[in-house]
Length: 54
Ligand SMILES: [Zn+2]
Image (cartoon, rainbow, N blue to C red; front, side, top):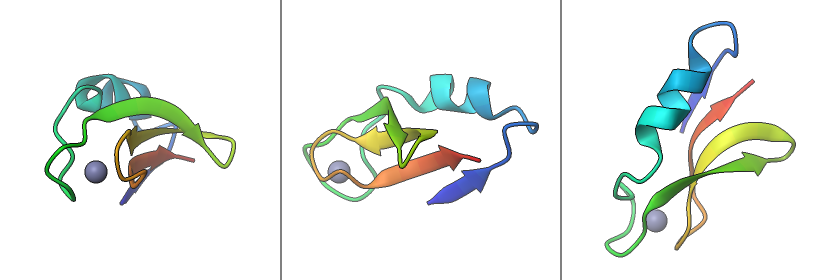
C-alpha cells in the first residue's frame, strides 16, 4: 500500500487508480472508498487498500 500525502497530488492518483485491476487478486477491481476515514483506493473483492491519502 502506498501512503500519499493529500498535499502531494493524492486526488489525481486516486482518480487514475479507480477501475484498475487489483494487484493482489485475480478477480478484483480497485475502486475509490474511504479507509479508516481517509480517501483510499480499495479492491472491491479482497478489500486490500492500494493507496491511502493521509
Ligand atoms: Zn483484490
